[in-house]
Image (cartoon, rainbow, N blue to C red; front, side):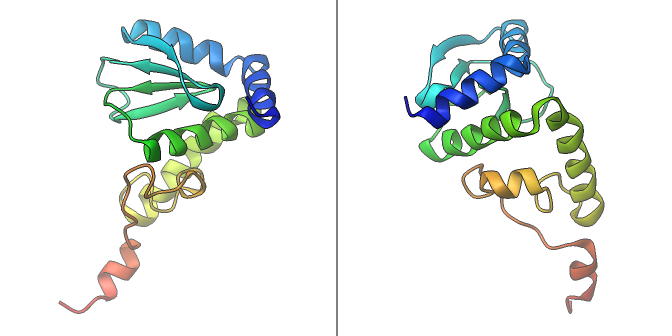
Length: 138
């Protein structure tokens, strides 16, 4: 494993986000396995919240679908964001979700964390802002 992924792994273990991810995976009934670049894949997660095919807590990628290489790249970038933002990731991410929702009506188009993780890799299509939609001729 590359040094940068080992550092990320240690940071996310230290900030307890990986531990939280393992706990959530267990609650959702997921099977754990080693994934690429030091992440843990939690496959077959149940539950209804959050409404996503995949989400990441620390170094744990919780999956409700079979992942594509692009989706794993996207979620791996979120793992790095957890390491960089430490315990502030969750409130910062939720703030970015709110900002995007106000601007576009979705949680990803103007969410800096989703943009930096790669919208297309995550299966997202960028939508225009509400103002841009109002300006378009019918």
